[in-house]
Every structure is written in C-alpha cells, then in structure tokens.
Image (tube, rainbow, N blue to C red; front, side, top):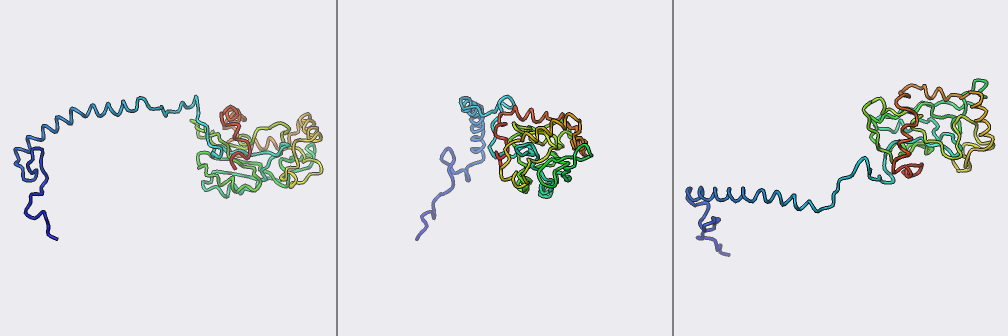
Length: 270
C-alpha cells in the first residue's frame, strides 16, 4: 500500500499555522513571552481553585487524643496476662512466648508452685499445675506487635488488648513487668497465692469447670492477709528488671478509661 504522506508536510504546526520545526528563530522567540504571560496569569487561579475545591469537603482530621478513633476488635496492642475465674494465673512459665518472639522482647522465668503452708516457708500456688511465671517482662522498645507470642501460648495466658497509648519520655518505663501486665481482678477473683479449688485438677480449670473462687479459697486468703504471709508475692515485685517503671496499676487505670476497654477482655482478639 502506498504511503500517503510521501511528499507532504507532516511537521507540527505552530500557533500561526507555520511549522515549528522549520519556523524562523525570530517567530519562536515572539511566541514564548506570550505563553509565559498566560501561565503567570492563570497559575494563581489554579492554585486557589484547589483550595476552594477542598473547603466544602468533610474534614478527615481526627480529634486525637480528645476523641480517639476506636480500634478494630483484633487490634494488636498492649499485652495482658490473663487469670482463671478464681484469680489464679494462666501463665505456666513455659517460655514458649519468649522463644517465639522474633524481636527478643520477652523475658520469662518460671518457678515451681509450692503447696507447703506459708507459715512453714512455702511460696504458695499462683497457677494450676506445676509451674508459674515468676518473672515476666516485655520490652516495648523492641516489641513489633506481630502477635506470634499469643499464637505460641498453650494456655491462652497471653493475649493482646486494644490499648496502644504506650508512648513515654522515659525509656525505662517501656519495660513492662508482670505486675503491670497481669489482668485486673474481676468479680469472684482473689489475689494469689492460694490453693486450687478442692477436688479440681489443672485440666478442670481449662475445661471451664471453675467459675469463681470458693468459700475455702476466700477463707485462706483472709487468713493469709491477716497473718501477713504473702508467699512469694514480694519476690515477684523484686524480680530482676524494672518493677518501679511506673506505679503498679496506673496503666490498668488508663486502660479502663479508654473507649475500647470493653473490647480488651480475654478472647476479644485471639
């Protein structure tokens, strides 16, 4: 097929109908000031047009921290060490969470439960079974909130809450200890150490057969507090790490006042 453009002028035309490629230099120089004047004239108008177009749109700014935006139910926030319905701890000190942590942010030291009477030097029982987590620390300067630790926990002792306001001007306060991570005592719970429910085994706790503290457990705790024998509770507070990073319970109080506190109970974000 023959080429129809052979012998024809196909060069781009200028504003005056002449070819820009072959246009005289004087003609191109005369066109440039006119283009520059028009661009300078309409540039401010274009800029104000962007401003006017956004003036009547819905404001997307969030009023934080006065009105924090609710997080998703499965949000990965601050960790929490859960308890059984009678108050005994679910953590058994297996250290699987520390092994699963890719950032090496968790430190766990397990210890044996001791059913020897406290008056005879016993350390007391803090969890069903043989062991419990005597020392538990999470370094939030390292934590990447990946959730692998809660996946590795075999007893559902460690979960992640919706609380995320962890910023602080002191690096030492971002190393949370066990007394800060333990879930607050709910109704029907007692502060350990105290014996298990009479006639119950460890598996009974995980099968949901224990619903609250019994009268015998309450009597034991009252007698323990009256005698001043707290077992190894002082040992937990004085454990290696940073127990004085903040006032015990201060983070729990801030957490309870958070709008998403109702979603941070155990099982809210498995």
